[in-house]
Image (cartoon, rainbow, N blue to C red; front, side, top):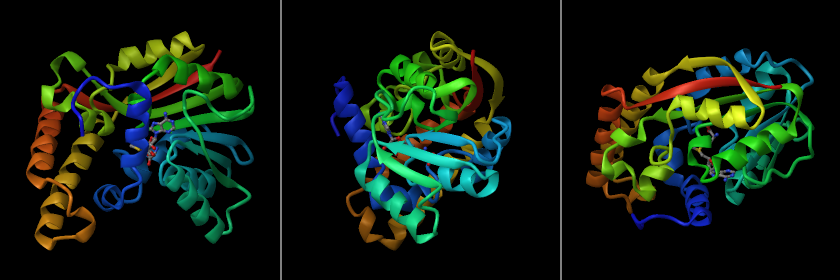
Length: 264
Ligand SMILES: C[S@@+](CC[C@H](N)C(=O)[O-])C[C@H]1O[C@@H](n2cnc3c(N)ncnc32)[C@H](O)[C@@H]1O
């Protein structure tokens, strides 16, 4: 991967392509965010989701968030993701589980959402807002599709970019949700500028620390097992970056945050 300053469209393509690799599924597991399904459950409760509501999952990835919210909160979920293979396999999973009517995935860009104005009761976005190059546009798109009084729930990496190690400010660091992540206050301001008033903030840095440890453990195990899907990985570089990310969490530079905001 190139480490130079990036064209926004290239960054988006790179993120979508990276998260469709078999290697990512092996290393990250079922859902691609810190806190896994437990934090998604917490997000659903904090949003006070109710049976029959329509929810948009922005950057739905493998669909784990959408499937959990539909199963446990009785909502219909529309997932949008830039990765066409992610969308196809999430739709296949929905069909295989008889959920085709309630959980649906569409290829689309968070900065140009393929949904009508005021068409959903709630929006969720897990571990992806930090990767959108134009965060202000993504925030106003989420506000646009939300009904008045509706809520948005974000879980995301929050950090101090000025203290982030240079090795994590690369394109690889961008894809890994670090290079363009912002302090919590900036997320609150971005949402506020889009007409979304933050009502809940929670710190979940422990979930990020745990996920980083888990990634390192899997890298060690997969290297020893010589897993074919991971043959192209430079394990030494990957583990060095994982160690830097772990240090950033220990030093209080990086954390993970849950935000709920209401459309005012
Ligand atoms: C870290 S994964 C998170 C996936 C999912 N939200 C989860 O928590 O399991 C980031 C996802 O964002 C998607 N993505 C990145 N940029 C996007 C954009 N501009 N619009 C839509 N999806 C995007 C990627 O394709 C990838 O599936």
